[in-house]
Image 1 (cartoon, rainbow, N blue to C red):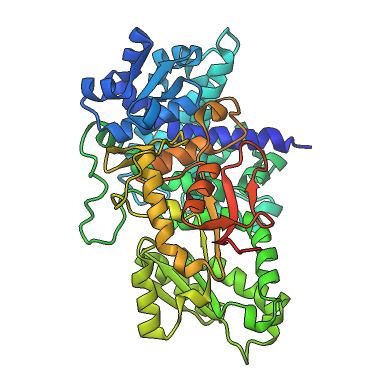
Image 2 (cartoon, rainbow, N blue to C red):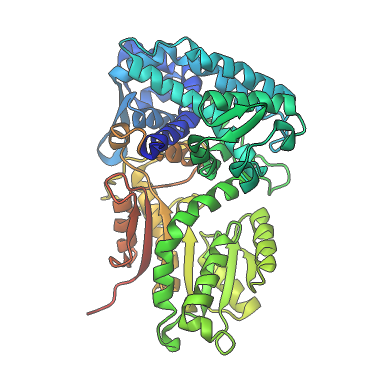
Length: 536
């Protein structure tokens, strides 16, 4: 019988490793870690000047290490500066940070090859790391620092299995056929010799058994295979982590100079949509209850339709339509009262995927381009081109409000003193937490007129104080979220801060609906129905 709690902890540490390793290597290469070993502490402003760094991304990097317990973060009043101090754990890790060099070199090498094909040269580099892994990369797993050394091995293991799981998952390896029966390498892959070496390593990890050249999943292997999508979002940002040297110490625009104006360089969007689609399904059950209650009301009290901003691959719209069709009063009245479905996304690739998936599911919907930061423009487009009133729709979105494009807030609250511990940047420039709240307020005020009637149903991602994360390693993926979002100019704030700013905009989270995952102090995902406060 497998210990799922223990394996889940391993998965979280894999995700930690995927972002911590390149962060450590980038800082180590410029001497930042050596500075901490010599001086013990430093202000962000001092480090920025000394190492000629981009302050925003340097702050994100240092906060990643704080979340891993290697530094302590202290934010000055009014967020004018941030102080970092090395911990005992940092004093163990920093002198041996070059142990991570090989895996970071591997992700840089793999970036030169096709992202979906299993190619020989990067695999040969990966296989060399399998051998080093079996020798624990020279670390002492039984000495006085064994706990920290084992954690480093978990981080490295994340690089060996995370991208591999995603590659296999997107390629169909985790089909029932392979999960339920034994198989030979040549049944799945055109390069069975290389694939056998990969399977042999997974045998070493206890994920497979091998008998007579036939491989079969173990319970442990099935645990990770079924959760391959949990790695997808973090792995999709490897293009960003290949360029941390540039982002922190060089050209902060290096991943924003796309030639054709639409291709994203900082993230593998197809992989991101695949990974997030798998993760979102965990929260649909909570949303179902909200949707069923709303669309079982008298027809005159129901919205005319649903708008999914940031529709991704269309899975959320498909799910909502199915729930309404099969489980609500509205589902029985669709001929007389058709349901307007609108999928909106900023990314053209996502729009194509959504259109294809909805057509295949025989679901009618308008799928259009839109910017979450410009609801007025969206409302005008819907009204003029389709005769749809945005105010008459239930607005839904999943993990999107934090991904608005940065713009300076028109109104700045000089008295604001943010409670957020987050690290925020825009193209390398540090954005103070006070300004992030002012910007979020402006954003929510723009949406308030369109959602006060039927509400904004939002599943949102949040940050957590790094002190808390560091005390709960193996229990949360917060470090990975903070790194991927911090280095790509996204603005995740704590749940409490999110609610405070929404309230400033006159939008309040319905306490009967509000749910957070996990339901503890580590909660960093929330489900909210935001709407104007009704007078009693």
